[in-house]
Image 1 (cartoon, one colour):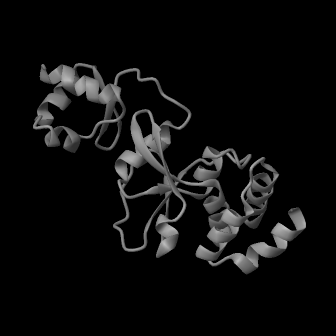
Image 2: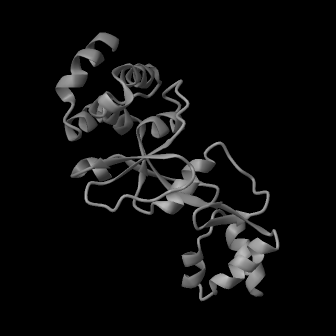
Length: 197
């Protein structure tokens, strides 16, 4: 297959990085040539997609996921993804391991949260957005995280998320309690759960 077609096919499935091409044995110069011809568009630092792509409402999540391989969408971003808030975050909230190198992201505006231990991996779901694998914390884990990081996002946001979670059909109180234990916020959440449930 012709290299230009191969690159465009990769970019059409999502967002492509120069290192993705190098893994396929394709020189970066081909990517830059396609960009200069207007066939590919730079959408972030080292991130390219086809010109005029089909962009979804979660496009910024795909951009951050491609930039932060080890990151997990969290807090306000995860709440919005799961429909558990009326908030429209102006930053993408991403969790990384406490020891991980802080990523440098020019666009979109990103807020990095560090987590350690089981709290980093517990409750993680994998989704595909615009052909990019994106990790997002599940609804119950996100609610527990909101109480853990209530000083960053506000207690009112955490309570709203809890109320929305508890009002859903098929809510899983046991799952919520499990993540409250992992995030060490069981005692903090208990009075709110008792008053809302």
